[in-house]
Image 1: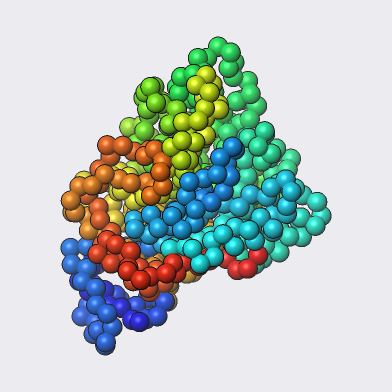
Image 2 (image 1 turned 120 degrees about the vertical axis):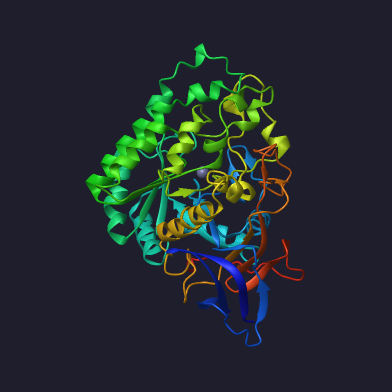
Length: 449
Ligand SMILES: [Zn+2]
């Protein structure tokens, strides 16, 4: 089935143009004014922006995190994504204590198969490094898995990587074109906090337990290490001014990108001070000084905005001892809120907002993922992933997840409505709803494990 999108405002790399767009099969086939329908299905996009399908570069779904299983599986996580213009969801595979990374990846692929409403891509976290593991890692990198994720904290969870290990990984996998995602929080700095001096029953103690300095120290160390090893670094969920400023300063000298998340733009420590403040526990923690942080975002400090969506059921998030915030399930929901809260940064200038979304929620993540030749722009030959966005719809509350979770952004409203979404040419969202009889048509970007 071919599709002609008529009368839209196409958000191209070079600017916004009023034009038609023709989809043939799975690909964008032509851009131009007055294109003939030639029997294709016609979507009238008058009054709407036509964006390249959005990408959430950082989500957690269908996985166990600490004591709890996440509330969004692949079906539900990708459904809320698609309804909000997101056509590729990136999530994680972490090697467990009893399996190889390849086995963990095969399990994730089985869970995802036939159940995804968006395309999916996996970032990989290996935890053992025997010679056979290295062969696996190299083979995976060569077969299209180009993003590996590491943590400079979480010793107890068995995923902590020290500088020696990171250097080994950088030197061995970097030359294969792997890009390294790092959660930067200095574990020693966190361990040095005097927890006994804090009232750990209060949500705000979480921000003291994981101080800004821990993030900044770790970012400094990783920038130096990545430069020494000549590898591509991506710092996930930057939450501090100091961290962002160091990354911006390093950009001229090395290949480094970073993301921040809606919670670090729009929520501050005040949310942790509420009687139910534990519901806003995530790491890194919410912090103060957000107006200045938003200024950094508007000035282009963050190559991407992604969610770090980590959905816990209400009952699980509230299941803690009431005495120590370190026992709270750690994470917020965000997928469905992502485009709305990114837009809000530039909302008074809709053309600018549309271009920033196309850049920071589509092109940059596609390129960092290593799939810039398939996704991330409205160009002939690329996948026909399209998000047709009405910027002046009725105000509605944002909804981060369709699961039974505490909303991270209560009271936040958005004027945006994603009227139509195409995934590789399939008209998957029609008039704001999932197309009737449609089975999930999302596929993994990467090849078989
Ligand atoms: Zn995460």
